[in-house]
Structures are given as C-alpha cells and as structure tokens.
Amino acid sequence: MPEVLISRPIHELAPLLQKKEISPVELFNEAIERIHELQPKLNSFITITEEEGRKAAVEAESEIRKGQYRGPLHAIPISVKDLFATRGVRTTAGSKVLAHWIPDYDATAVARLHQAGMVLVGKTHMHEFAYGVTNDNPHYGPARNPWDSTRVPGGSSGGSAAAVASSQCTASLGSDSGGSIRTPAAVCGVVGLKPTYGRVSRYGAIPLAWSLDHIGPLTKCVEDAAIMLAVIAGPDPKDPSSSSRPLADYRQEMRGSIRGLRLGVPRQYFFDHVDTEIQKFVSAAIHQLEGMGATRVEVDIPDLENCSAMEAHITLAEATSYHEPYLKKQADDYGPGVRTNLEAGRYLLASDYVKSQRTRTLLQRNFNQAFEHADVIVSPTLPALPPPVGEVFVQSGDLREHVIDAFLRFNIPYDLTGFPAISLPCGFSSAGLPIGLHIAGKAFDEATVLRVAYAYEQSMPWHVSRPTSPK
Amino acid sequence: MGLAALLLAPPLLAEEQSLDATIRSMTTVTGTNLGAPWLQPTADLVGIILSDSQSLRTLDLGSIEPATYFQAD
Image (cartoon, rainbow over all chains, first blue to last red; front, side, top):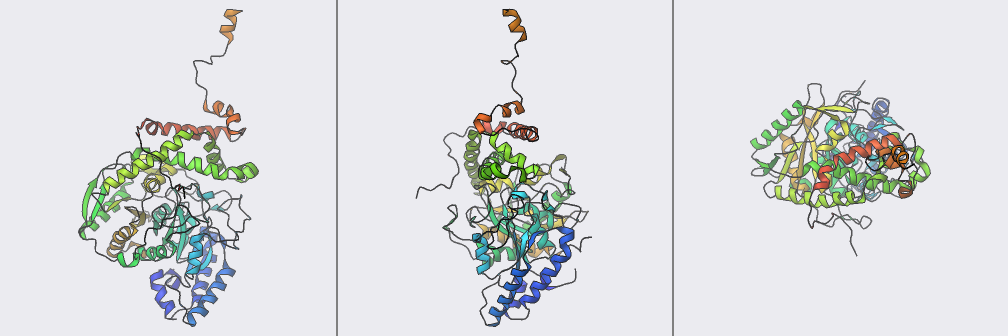
C-alpha cells in the first residue's frame, strides 16, 4: 500500500495530531476506507463502527483544535476484539450465542481507551468465545492472514492482529489465555503484549477462563505497545484480580540500555520440535541481542511437560462453568468445536483441576528460580508457521502436530504463571510468513520485557515491513 | 442354572468401560444426557486430555497450595 497516515504507528501520528498537522477525521477516513477495501478479503471485523467512529473523530478534531489534547491515543483509530463489552455496540464474542447482545457498559480497558481519546473503528473477528487458535469461525466465516490470505491469522485475537498488520487500524485490544495475543501477533508480523496477570483489568471481557485471561495490546511496534499499556494498566475495583502494584513509565524505561542484561535461554521445552526457519531467525535474534551487550545465560525450567494438561483442565473447567447457563438455553447456537470443548468440561475431575492450580504454584517457583539467573527468557513464540485455513495439522520441525498443540505450546507457560510476555517480528520464512520472537519477564516487570524488545526492534526493524494488498 | 448364568453374564468385572459408555452413565452426576452427535467427539476429547494428564497426576506436590486470587476482604 502507498505510504498513508493509517500505516504509521501511534508514536509517529500522535505528535502530528497534537500539532494539528493532520486531521483526526482524515485519519479516520483512511482507516474506514481501508477496512471497507479489505473486509471482503481478510474478514478482520465482526462489526465496523463507522458511525460511532466518525462522531469520535469529529469530537477529537474539535477538542484538539481547542487545545484540549488528551495524550498519545487521542484521535488514534483503534479496534477492539469483539470479546470486550462496548456500550451501545454489539458484542458477539464471535458467537451466535451473543449475536444480538448490545451491552450498556464498557469493559474497563475499553473505557480507559475512550478516556484517552481513541477513535473506535470496529470490533474485531475472533475465534468463537476465544476458545481456539485459528479464527476459523463457523458463524462469521474464517478471518485470514494478510501476508497470505489462504492461511489463518492465528487466534483467538486474529482479527486484531490482521487489522493492525494490514493498517485497517493503528492498534488493537486483545486477550490472551493460551497465547491469543502473541500467536496472532507472531503470524501476522505485529507486536503483541500479554501483561502480567492482574496488570490490566479483565472487567467487561467475556471470560474464557478467569484465572488464565489476560488483556493486552496488539500494535505495529514496541513503543506503541508501551503507550497502550500505560493507558489500560492499573487497578480496578471491578476486577478482584487486578493489582495495585505501581506502574512504570514504560515508554521511558523502554529506552534504557540492555548492556549487561541477562538473556535466559531455556535448555528444555522452548526449543523442542521447532520449524527450522523459525529456529534460525530466533537464534539470530538472540545473537543480535548478545551483540548489543546482553549476556546469554542457559536456564533450567522443570515441569513444563505438564503445561498442556494443566491448561486443558483449567480452561475446560472454568469455561464450562461460565457457559453453563447458555448451554442450558442455547446449546445449538455454539459451533461444533466450542460445543465439544464445553461438553467435555463436564467430564473431567475436580481433583485434576485443583492439581493443575497447585502445579501453577510449582511452575511459578520454577520460573522464579530461573529468573534468579536471568532478567528475561527468550524463545520462539511458535514452533510452526500458520497453516492454510481449514488445515488442523502443522509441521513443527520433526513433529507433525495439531495446530492447537503447536500454537499453545510456548505460550501457555506464561498464561499459567501470569508472567508478562511479548511477541515481536524477528524475520520472515522463505514463503514470506512472519516469525515471532518471544520475550518473557518477571512478574510485573513489563518494563524490562519492553526494553529488550525495543532494543531488538531498533537494531532489526522487521516491524516496518507490511503486507501488500491481499488478493 | 448356576453355570449358565455364569457363562451368559456380561464380563463386567474384568473390562473397563469405554469413555462414551462412561459419559452416558454419568447423567445423574452431570444432569445432562449427552447423546449424538456430541457423545463421541466429547469422549474422544476427554480421552486425549486424560492420556495427556498422566504425568500431572503422578506429580507429588507436597504442601503446595493452589494459585488463587480469592481474597477474604
């Protein structure tokens, strides 16, 4: 696409908006034009909020003209995963079950984005109830990857990642319970940040699994992720799990040096059965970070082989519990994949659920021991490239596995422990598909995660590559 | 009669029930009568999860308590 405003990141647009050098309405018009152009090809949105967005853009223009500039998100076109309650705007969670639900309140993260002056351009496509990794949705059709529209965009925040990558909006809000921000970020070539559990309020986000759900941004670059996090983070009396731990100045701390910082490279699990091209680019990224002064440290993290079972027991139990009332009244409105998952949740043992929750404590201890020797832990975000829409198996190096197993594998440990993790682009496969670098940090230390990611991004600007218009 | 009864009786004691039969028999526990077309895929998924849970079930966690955000205040 030609260089247009909507293809630029927040941190470039914001000063131009503040100085009145560009018009919020003009920026919004570019976003809407792009959405209408790409929606038939990529299906990134479930609802396009053209009317509401235009009104917000006009208001932003008026406020900025009067000198009432609110901050770096003022007048920025942003999309929100269709799992967040939006006052007056249909919220389907990607399901027929909620096809006509129009909430009378905003999710806390959405309210904070509104307060910061965002212009909402639409509700993005998602895997039904966030219960999957491909965004192959039986009710709203499959969403597609902007780098190759025959392939999946990852999920469950796939519409958000595809919309940011293809410049249908500047940034998006997603959720991550088993990698649902980081997986689509990796396969669509954008930045996806899963903050620490409790850092961002979950209030108003339709739950998949309460104890695993995290809210975070998908953006064009690391600096934009820092800007978004600063707005949505912080305690919320409406979410009992939200934390009052103090927030860092993410944008400022992100710019610090990584000299002497310890990069933990796990000996186990995170480099097993990985596509050779992904392995190559992630190894190169680690070398790049070492070249910038970081120190590579090999770390041991035991018990990771239990993550898949733990995630299954926790997600199935919590999701089935949440959906029970809907299953009683609207069971036939679920797609077959999600319906099967929800039914299965009735037949697992409570003792396995509790054991999984207890094992999370063990896993946290194991990671905390690793973090005594390392400041961050680096790995691939995913072991495999995204499959064609409808294909359920992928090749992860020497292992052919189900796409769910592949896409959850490296993400789940950080949903189970709640530690912050980011995916950012670190290369492209020979087929032109983006590859994600995964950087995780200590609890509530998003600042260090962002610092390492920013340093890498500044030295290897893969993130500036954008897909050409899909056929 | 004694021998005939023994020969004709189903081998209940020695054989484990299949998962779909187990699920069918759990109606009183779950309050849900799961029939076609959901019974088989549900049984298959439960089977996969149980098979994947063997290592988890053998873990000795000692006195480790569950991760939770429950607060009494």
